[in-house]
Length: 292
Image (cartoon, rainbow, N blue to C red):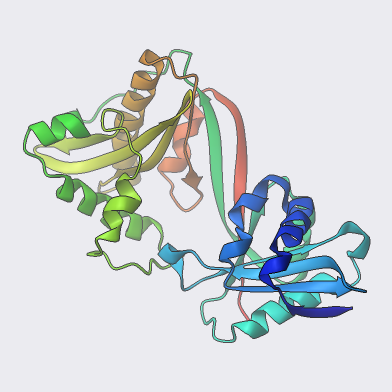
């Protein structure tokens, strides 16, 4: 058994090994974009692989992923691949993340065996938009506008972008953002592919206190960046309900069948939104962290 650096000619076979291990999670680990990638071979056959994956938004904490064929598991091979991965990137002061969906029990058990600690769950509900939604009480003195209507009233998209980016930084304190706030890249990151009638802002006494971007994928509303700024959780929740309640209503009027969004367990207000809705199905993307 040997462990060595992967070659581009082996990418297709590595993808199959990852598919066998991660199933639907595999899209989170694009093999061709791995920063470091290794294979384990038994008599020339690839029986395991692993790599480090870096998100340009959160480059300080890479993700590690290890996949081993079933017949070679529980023999210490995965741990050896993991060790090789860490040695390829010796300076990782903030740690390494391991991630998978909550139904991938074998990966969760493997991460815990390696002393990864759970620290965040990202709950992803799918909402039925064909039913009547509860009427959410709106905060006083507010205006609810689409991005298009906001622009027609002189609200610059740059101010909406600044609000979104500032709140993105605050909400991702658990994984430092590595792109500067003034980078021109944020416009594409935040606004790419959005629907400007489904993307909304909330003004309270003329001040921007909420914004939520959204896009449409087939018959599904994808709510992407919903943020509310308030002094407490109840105030933030009221703003989020105002934004998302209207997005659900528009989606229903358009004949969209479902809606989905993400709720991190670190976001107390956002995590309460699904409780008032008809959830068709859901899954949870679990994050674990290993500190060398």
